[in-house]
Image (cartoon, rainbow, N blue to C red; front, side):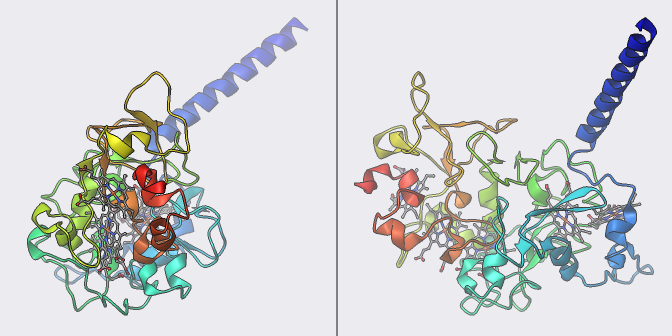
Length: 356
Ligand code: HEC
Ligand code: HEC
Ligand code: HEC
Ligand code: HEC
Ligand code: HEC
């Protein structure tokens, strides 16, 4: 009996040890692709590792389409698995059950109209209103050497894209090496170490943020990404006139909203996220709403459940999604119903006085 119990004890403790080892390995590897099943990805997309003879451009098969295909899914799940590795899905061909933080290109590709999102090549044809021209593009606000090419479509990455190095035209070359690189800490020093691979070029510090391990899927007040105001600069790379203070005055039809502005601890703002009771003992503190996120400086190292009035800021993604949403102008909410006050969400999460 005693012998058996001893054996059982050794057995359970070695299982515990193995588990600890396994999880510490996992946590070290978190954020980078770690899998022995190279073929799971490189087999279906064989063009990814192709090198070209010196002096010739890299010949990645399918180019931008490679990003789109791997980050798409034909079912409603917005996280899929390849070789045991989690792949964030940003383009479902049926309505996604729970879109990731950037939204989902489903709304754009399903014929609901160009205004629902960024018309990325391989997902949707050119935007009929803007063609491939970013509204409010200002060359001075775009620090990339190449600049945006109005003759070419918008792509996931590369000089006409948001992710990767914008000094490199080819979307795949612009991101090469990033998926397998160590991505912590997120300090903006390399593409991999920038929030969601968002770093204009080598010389520009990348976007900072706290990356939710599920890319914001099923986010709540307690579990969500954390944003830095550096996200505004990323958007301003292509929409500079929507950010520069000298150009954000009143303009028709939309007088541009202040961005990068601290949410005041006075007036209607003291009631931010009115639907949820704040902690009673903390003045100027309200519960975070993932439907109207804020940017913070300094950034917390894990998601905070509260927002601090007088410190936290309104930023581009307080109102917009990055990829696509069910609403025009990639907004988080239906602008028309918010304006008429029918819904308690949207603008009214901050502008609580306008709800009456
Ligand atoms: C979950 C998908 C996935 C798996 C599994 C995977 N890779 Fe990759 N790999 C990628 C993607 C995506 C790229 C291209 C983008 C990039 O370089 O960031 C890539 C690029 C590469 C590159 C060229 C860029 C670089 O980092 O040098 C090499 C080499 C590579 N993979 C080797 C491997 C090997 C070896 C394995 C198996 C041990 C493997 N990969 C498993 C997705 C995967
Ligand atoms: C690499 C350039 C680039 C960057 C960076 C970029 N955009 Fe855009 N954006 C475009 C282009 C091109 C269009 C016009 C084509 C389209 O709408 O698809 C556009 C259109 C838009 C529109 C209007 C969409 C419509 O159809 O009504 C909004 C809103 C927008 N962008 C917001 C953002 C926000 C917010 C960010 C930062 C998270 C951002 N953009 C970053 C290139 C960019
Ligand atoms: C073979 C599949 C595959 C291809 C092709 C691929 N990716 Fe990925 N991508 C992945 C996987 C897997 C992850 C998750 C890696 C991780 O957990 O860090 C990922 C993560 C990302 C992320 C999120 C990074 C983060 O911080 O969480 C971005 C952005 C991204 N990919 C962009 C791209 C772009 C742009 C391209 C094309 C140039 C591309 N991917 C091509 C599989 C792929
Ligand atoms: C407080 C909410 C809010 C913030 C913050 C905000 N926007 Fe917008 N934005 C809107 C609304 C609402 C519209 C649609 C206006 C309309 O249709 O008249 C819009 C429209 C746009 C458009 C499309 C313009 C067009 O001609 O259709 C672009 C591009 C854009 N925003 C970029 C940005 C960028 C970049 C930032 C950050 C620097 C930003 N926005 C911050 C609410 C916001
Ligand atoms: C994340 C919080 C937040 C959200 C969401 C938000 N706002 Fe604001 N809004 C602010 C802040 C902060 C100010 C600036 C207040 C100040 O400086 O006194 C502001 C100012 C304004 C102003 C005054 C503009 C000016 O030039 O002074 C208008 C109008 C406005 N917002 C409309 C909207 C509309 C419409 C929406 C929805 C599309 C919206 N806001 C969503 C926080 C927000």
